[in-house]
Image (tube, rainbow, N blue to C red; front, side, top):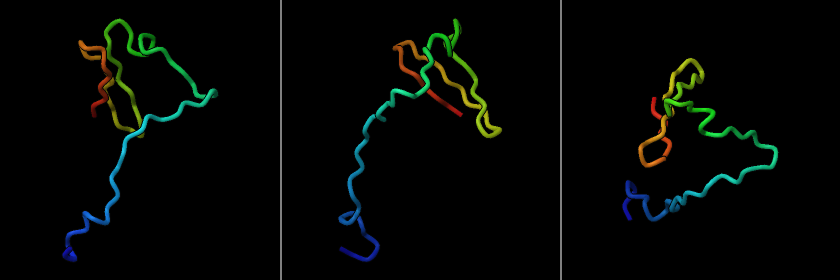
Length: 62
């Protein structure tokens, strides 16, 4: 392994779903997205679009 190649030392990242807490706030996606299936979310002065796809998935874009 060369000094520039650290792939052997880099741990593999695994994605796990967050564990919901009983105290977490819950919002039904239909209430959040409305009849249009989309909502603008403002966060730290930035605007994001949260929308539902035809397949029922949620997509968040800046």
